[in-house]
Length: 78
Image 1 (cartoon, rainbow, N blue to C red):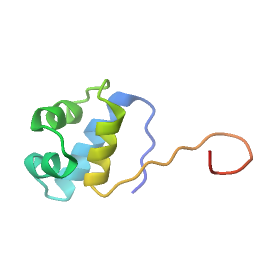
Image 2 (image 1 turned 180 degrees about the vertical axis):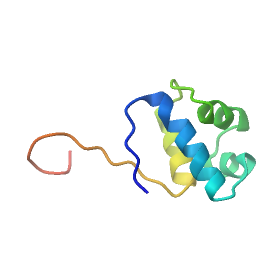
Image 3 (image 1 turned 120 degrees about the vertical axis):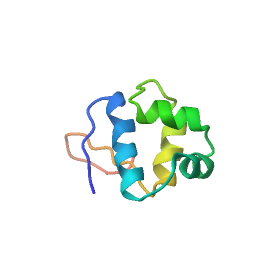
Image 4 (image 1 turned 60 degrees about the vertical axis):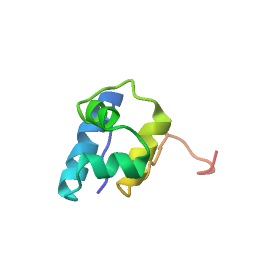
């Protein structure tokens, strides 16, 4: 599944849908991601100021990855 995200506060609710579809509990994802349940609750609730590194940990715990796209030609690597 690919999702286009335009704002930081859109990430958490998407992760919540993915977690629920996978039938995972918040406790399990938080443990795997190495974050607190409160952090995950806040993130899933749309908190747009969550530290990016922790958001990446949750994405990875759910089996996801990030893809950044920018207009223009060139090498895909930074």
